[in-house]
Length: 293
Image (tube, rainbow, N blue to C red; front, top):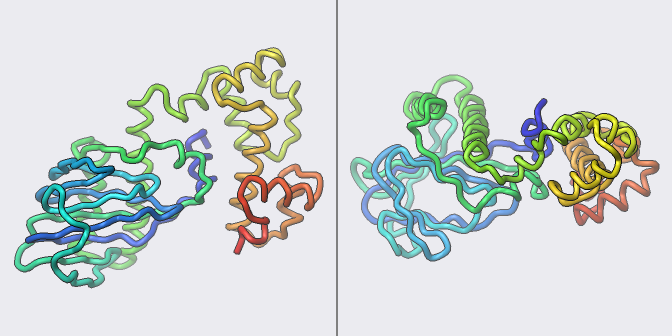
């Protein structure tokens, strides 16, 4: 796995409820903040106004607005619209989507709203801006949206599974586009040529001992240079980075396995369950058992 693969794995990304909005007349769709959730709004037809922090942004057919942290926003047919939907929505299910129809007759605007859940402590998602805009004319995105749209009009067997898989692929492609055009991003720091091989190795196997001299030898730099590079590009020491990655992997194991807390602690290189529980609570605000739920 590369670094982005590992960060997405630690984020524990899952698809949520996807909505096909078929809209006409006056309408407004409020989107309040929801911790640990993201949404991508795809304009398939017509236009919509996005109100974000008192700014109005026109979204046209072919535009995608992606909110990694579900920053509060409003979608409506007019700028400065109120957050009250003027017509009663008519909800139904169609394949992998909930259909939200507002207004009468043929829809003037059609939106696909793809929802995602992730670990609220995800470093990757926290690093992204409030909204990322991309266009459907990108070669990799266009056929994906075509398939998603097909699932809303001609759902077949396992349509929900297909829609979830396509939605997660769209999530990855949006991130690829963003990181490709942003030279000073969070991911760029992880991909520093001197640090990237070591970071990738640590993220793949954080349970290894990874003594500082061992890290320096792996990166082919001196001990002092390694510490300087980590502090300069990641803002933390090599040991603190290793500790953080161990906790992220332990969080994933707590959610996705039935292993005991003791097993998770020892398998990630913590000396005892007590030490692990104390470190985990300091980072996540709850005990390992409380996080597992």
